[in-house]
Length: 166
Picture 1 (cartoon, rainbow, N blue to C red):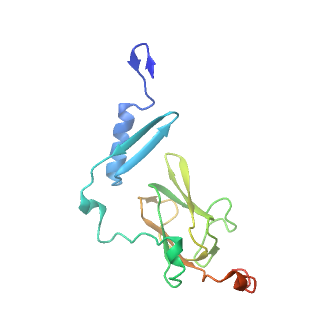
Picture 2 (cartoon, one colour; picture 1 turned 90 degrees about the vertical axis):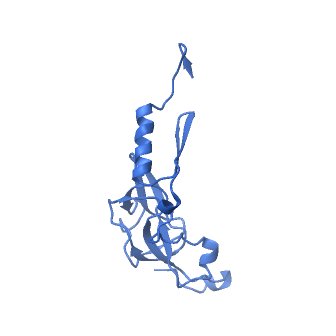
Picture 3 (tube, helix red, strand yellow; picture 1 turned 180 degrees about the vertical axis):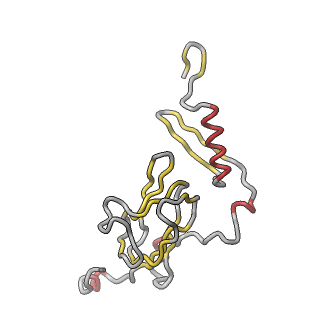
């Protein structure tokens, strides 16, 4: 936009520098930010050794392959950087616990960044087997947060004969 011959933008240099500092601190390679009609893409070059650490967990399996691995838990990872919060106002017990049943698509927590929460949604129906991050702690992208053992899949005919999950 032009205003009296000068270019105006919703982003200030100090804001961009602060975002770059956060990206470096949390080892974030890419960030997309949209304010109104203006958008900003920040990409920083990260050394390959910094991206793939030996302790880095394998990404969660897609839902299509989970059916073949009933005994393997699905690891729920942080989709963004921020402060992890267990539970959600729609979660019946207030916060999920080990042993609770969750349904695919159910909000089981959130991650807050700059006072904006991002819902953490279960990709599978199953039983929570582990909570791997404490409520209220800062988490980085792809940090393991929960493990869920998926329910055994059954055919539509069998589904009518089974009691609902607890």
